Length: 54
Ligand SMILES: [Zn+2]
Image (cartoon, rainbow, N blue to C red; front, side, top):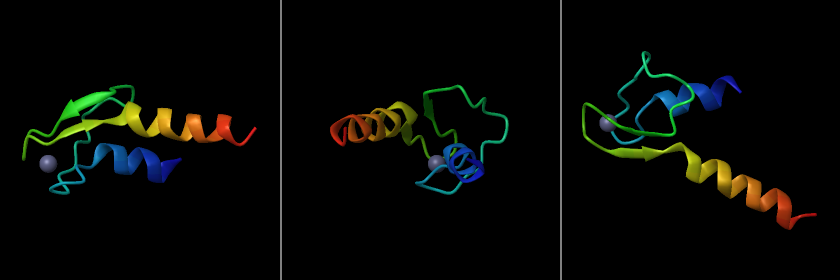
Protein backbone atom coordinates (compact mmCIF):
# COMPACT_ATOMS: atom_id res chain seq x y z
CA UNK A 1 0.00 0.00 0.00
CA UNK A 2 2.76 2.42 0.94
CA UNK A 3 4.62 1.62 -2.25
CA UNK A 4 1.54 2.29 -4.34
CA UNK A 5 0.94 5.64 -2.66
CA UNK A 6 4.57 6.65 -2.96
CA UNK A 7 4.80 5.75 -6.62
CA UNK A 8 1.48 7.41 -7.40
CA UNK A 9 2.86 10.62 -5.95
CA UNK A 10 6.08 10.40 -7.90
CA UNK A 11 6.30 11.24 -11.58
CA UNK A 12 7.45 8.16 -13.47
CA UNK A 13 8.82 10.37 -16.21
CA UNK A 14 11.12 12.72 -14.28
CA UNK A 15 10.96 11.28 -10.69
CA UNK A 16 9.60 14.55 -9.38
CA UNK A 17 7.81 14.04 -6.08
CA UNK A 18 4.46 15.70 -5.53
CA UNK A 19 3.92 15.39 -1.81
CA UNK A 20 1.17 17.99 -1.73
CA UNK A 21 -0.95 16.10 -4.22
CA UNK A 22 -4.03 14.51 -2.69
CA UNK A 23 -4.30 10.72 -2.89
CA UNK A 24 -7.79 10.74 -4.34
CA UNK A 25 -6.75 12.63 -7.45
CA UNK A 26 -7.19 10.41 -10.52
CA UNK A 27 -5.65 12.46 -13.27
CA UNK A 28 -2.76 14.80 -12.78
CA UNK A 29 -0.15 16.52 -14.86
CA UNK A 30 3.41 16.79 -13.62
CA UNK A 31 4.26 20.42 -13.03
CA UNK A 32 7.89 19.70 -13.77
CA UNK A 33 7.81 17.83 -17.10
CA UNK A 34 4.10 18.18 -18.01
CA UNK A 35 3.69 14.40 -18.27
CA UNK A 36 0.10 13.24 -17.82
CA UNK A 37 -0.65 10.52 -15.28
CA UNK A 38 -3.92 8.62 -15.13
CA UNK A 39 -4.16 6.58 -11.96
CA UNK A 40 -7.52 5.13 -12.97
CA UNK A 41 -6.06 3.13 -15.86
CA UNK A 42 -4.04 0.92 -13.51
CA UNK A 43 -6.96 0.40 -11.17
CA UNK A 44 -9.39 -0.59 -13.90
CA UNK A 45 -6.75 -2.88 -15.40
CA UNK A 46 -6.19 -4.87 -12.19
CA UNK A 47 -9.93 -4.93 -11.60
CA UNK A 48 -10.50 -6.42 -15.03
CA UNK A 49 -7.85 -9.05 -14.34
CA UNK A 50 -9.50 -9.99 -11.06
CA UNK A 51 -12.82 -10.42 -12.84
CA UNK A 52 -11.28 -12.48 -15.63
CA UNK A 53 -9.85 -14.97 -13.12
CA UNK A 54 -13.20 -15.71 -11.57
ZN1 LIG B 1 7.42 14.78 -14.33
